[in-house]
Image 1 (cartoon, rainbow, N blue to C red):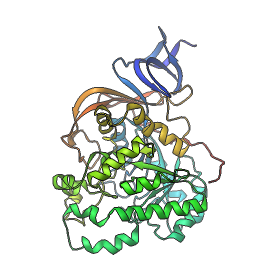
Image 2: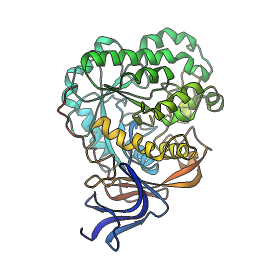
Image 3: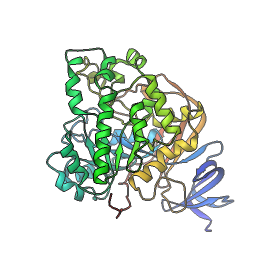
Image 4: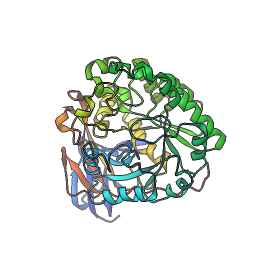
Length: 446
């Protein structure tokens, strides 16, 4: 073993595949080069990790950074800064920008915009639309493309693929797993009268009810099974969906969010008003408990923040003119570490949901675990740190979080990406040098 490294992390409690142990990690040329007692090995950067936990870098596979077109509420620089400050090493960004990301040229423009401005590694989804289905198979192979995103229900932006014929056409185009927002558009239209003339924000989960979500999810999975295409159901919110998806794991993987695991109606709407408004909605406590059971049972594959910022001015509009969405990329790690400390899941399960899970679902190359040859991506956390989440801490251009004032135990101490410190002690370090995420080309159809 060579005794010189670019970076050595010493004496941390390291979560390795299958075991958590106190050990050292040596990094060379951006990759993990040694795991074990490194003795007196020299390094350009030595990180004293004693008393800290070293996790595989957290990957947030669902964020909306609003660039191009909506930079007044977020852009690639501020969104990725928030990610880095929150302990996140890589993000997958969604296509509902302005214009929507539906062409090869629009996708390339995002990579061009991210160069030298993104603090973390990044991939971008291509949005499915009525006029680009034939091109999707080619576009999804572009380096750094996270895959295809489908909106079955209208949310933020103009992307919508609502009928079964359109959805089937998208499922037949390409081969990688497709990420889908499952809300049934016909049912949303049927029930719009409930809130159309103005309503309390607590009506949000009444309008966009459980059946709206379940109907879309069952339609999607039924089509996926007929066609043989793998699908990823985003931000699952209902007990009924989790029960259904548990029986369809051959092709369907499942995401839920920290917000839906932490908040519950009606209390969140009484306290936060439209700041608690997102799609699909925060629902009653019975659904939250079902999400936790689905995590315990292994039905949930991944956590995504669904970071979707809007300004406080926009959020102050009367419901339902107020837009849906909230910040989340910066609070994912502290919220979930607090849940770990409160006994709702193990630290190892958290790692599976935020690093190994994303790697499995999307075939990410070189990320997702602490192992020799992998990217030296680490989320270093202090499991004992007691902190309060505040709006002042939030780096998003929107400047707020629904968790303002929440006390948590467990906090990201450092974000290390490909061997470089990007965040340390709540401060960004160095330059914005995020790179496109690499994917393994799968040749297995379906």
